[in-house]
Length: 86
Image 1 (tube, rainbow, N blue to C red):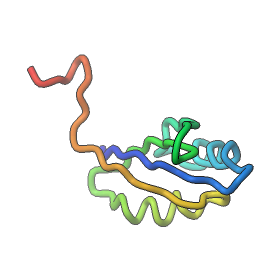
Image 2: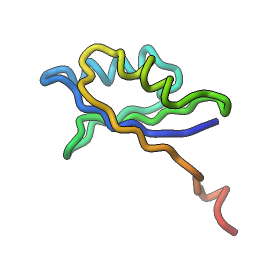
Image 3: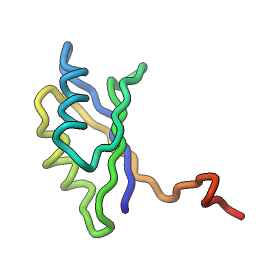
Image 4: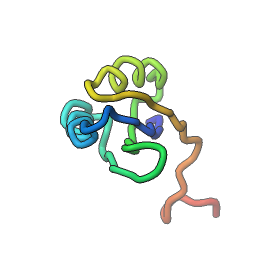
């Protein structure tokens, strides 16, 4: 799986609607957080290894009503207690 995060800015008054749409409509979004700072939401996504992240964000995420802007962060490695460096 290819893992990535998307910071999302929403139209005023639509943050909770956007969050609900992401988790309800996209199986690839296991978790969406409301956050403080420059963005309204932080969404975690996982797509198949041969998936196109740019196309996914463009066609599946940015088309959700109420989304104003996005910034995508692509993950290289995941470090967990059961899968670390050693």
